[in-house]
Image 1 (cartoon, rainbow, N blue to C red):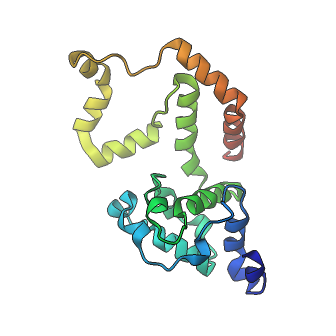
Image 2: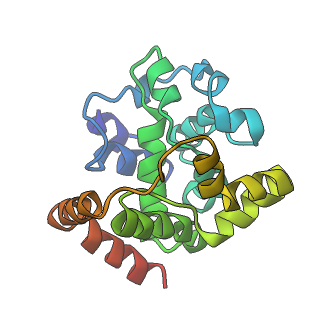
Length: 198
């Protein structure tokens, strides 16, 4: 697969080669078999509500679009894996997009985008479950309005009224999750991401 790429224009295939050679990219990915059918975009929730399109991202990678790592659109992906399940050619647009995001961060682009991930990770370490960053809450408030914010702020009271327990995990479970996150390298990885985003 990569031999074919080496015989073509090296500038144009640089990003394609990097995606295909990334550790997280499966060796049998059907990226080079992509026929631009659009099935990945037809079921994509992000494409429904924004300019994001997995098909366009795949085309940009295949065509060697030089600024794909700087493009804000790669950050609109929800990581729902719908595109992965729908592709008739065995391609995985979500995997490609994850590689692009990682490379974007490594090369120093879109550093502001990582703040939401850091906040989510910090919350996961502390509470055993992810939570939104302040900036993301503000953005969601702009999109969904006062009613959404009121429900979010009164979540505990609403749950009590409905007879539901607190959504917070017991301390013992949180401690066990933290140990797992430390032993698997998640905590250390989050520290490195934080240092690289400064």
